[in-house]
Length: 300
Image 1 (tube, rainbow, N blue to C red):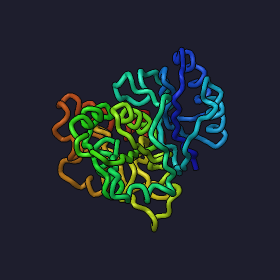
Image 2 (image 1 turned 180 degrees about the vertical axis):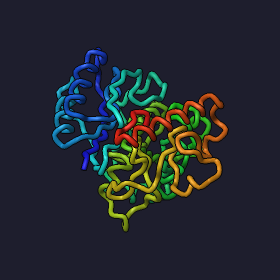
Image 3 (image 1 turned 90 degrees about the vertical axis):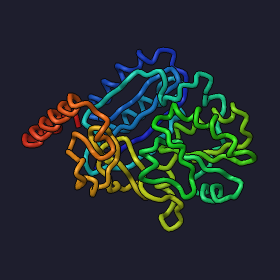
């Protein structure tokens, strides 16, 4: 079994580029794969590897400036869920496009998974799912509001257009691992919302801690690796991924006439040019050839 660690931490990195090389080299040496984003506001990502490898990388990150309090969430996968290791420099570790938003200055009230059900069941609480529409489509909490955003950067505009709906309401927000709520709750506080809460550790921690018989979660949770989705106990879910548009699919969706493995699904059948589709077909041919050789193609 491979250990999968999802992590983020807001801190100040004066020179993120100086951190990239040593971090990438350690991941390579320890055969850890996944994706880590570095920006002046901190670090974010998901990595997978052996227990020893993950421990070494986490120790390295905790030694970075301001990262001693790093928290992460772990799960397990029977196969390596990533094809390569990427350490990238970004302007934001989760893109909201609001320069005045700073989670270090304050966020909503953290709510432990054990207390989440009581909060979101209260009649004066509006529950908002801050994830993208394709993530919400395969699972969310009972009664949660779906903003229908295709990217997190669309959330501020959605709020401006809908804030009148939440007059005299307490706001409870949630996302996959908690990072988007760090920014969205700080944003709402800056917009004058008095009482804002968010699920500590995100959906992943809720699915890990709360027994299915007590759960208000419906469906599966999308994750950004080859597991595609997880369910209670963080067990791999039933979904597969369209490797053209990266959206989650049910296995039965592969029987639809629009589906062509690695090339298109019913969601993206009208989204790509013929040239892009031919590129996808060539990638799929290379993946098949690599599989015949017993290798993992990095395009996967």
